[in-house]
Image 1 (tube, rainbow, N blue to C red):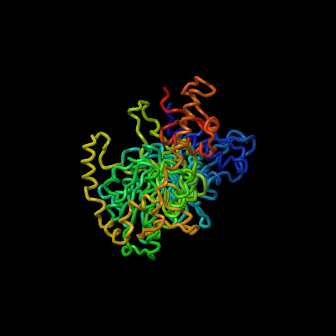
Image 2 (cartoon, one colour):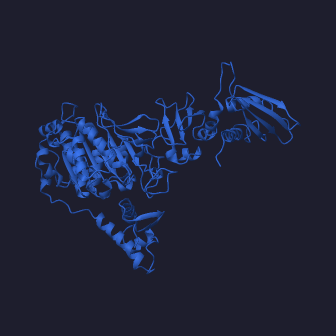
Image 3 (cartoon, helix red, strand yellow):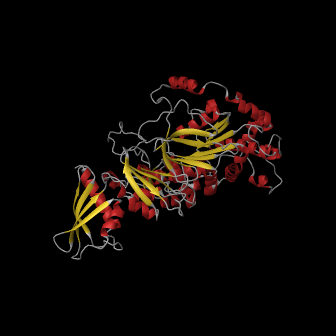
Length: 595
């Protein structure tokens, strides 16, 4: 049965009373509210106060006035010593001072929860078409923490889930706005505006929960900025990357692109001057080309915007397909993340995992990218869990983003996808946003229709003939040998000066260029061992005849493969991300399509 407005307000009144009046350390300890009634016009409410036989506490009216921000509180004696009648006027007609109306009491009910997380804060509230709006103010001597744990905040205020709150800090760190959504403002499809182009380094990519435009920054006028993007298949990661690539290209940047799987981007073939995709080695090729350009600019002296070569965007998608323990991969990701900004190279690292142990270079490399720019975190699989470490994305749990919007139809063909919903951060608390979709819905197009639309949307110009790439070729002799550079592994020891070996770092042909390309990294073999072990356990293992619907534990896989525990855990996670295994329960794995 639906709850009436009066019942909702009465519940809020009781909650504020318990927290601010009747709590054990408060002046009204032991005082209970009874028979709450709300005026139809919302100007006042009535109640009875019951105690254990004592008279009501002295000065109780003043405490009630402060707790409810009410300009007038009237207490009158009741039928006996432990009984009193209460009237609380929320709005005084013809008075200068007015308190929030009763519409704000539901928001006030959440005030104690916010104040537990932000001690000494002052919280006031109201409602809008989407739900409750709480305004949080800190004392002059205090500041809101740089990051707020959104998971704890959602639980504290009783939101449906973490996606149904939004926290927007003030610029001066003196407070912010907390929104608790009953209806989500980002549910509808958001199409890319025609004028969505990069301006002064800022790329419009979507809309925040408050309706403001969401931006990604690729440069700040002097230095480049980086970006970390994570999300499972179908969550919206590739759409966001394509939008950034298009804006960067239109904004005069050259694009270098690598893809650890292949087929992730429809835009790269038309916009990227360098494109290598299809596997881990192809992603490594893009890293090598980007690193060689970075080394050339370092050796050439200080890079000056507009005078020392074009701004470049190095984008590597499906980075988790590269073995995170590979020495070359760790070296390249870390060095590019650390040094490329000052040399006009924006680095976007993207994959299906947010976990630091799934990124070459680990948590330090991932947080170096985020710290030098920001992050877009889309829905990830349940095995991701919370982000470890003290980065600016701590407290954000992308696995809590549902695949479909709640309270929609149970008909799977009619459910609304949450694709595009994500958390964005640029050094502070993450803000909930949704990325723009392409200006037309391409899902119903035939391949021929899609190619025709893509040609009109992106153009047919050769990406090698853009002004940026022509300037790059004039600046860097190594561009003419990019294929050779891409296929020549970089030796981290030689780069650090540990040995006499050399590697390709500029336009010169160096000793390292004669090295053979290394074979494919070993993690693919480990993946196959894990997959074979899971299938074997389900069909031919100790429990022969076990139903494929049953699940396998990492311990069983460990014993069957002989791999190290870290390798087993890593490959199980990757197999889930790739759709090769399922993870319906924590620590238990199965096959996606049992026969």
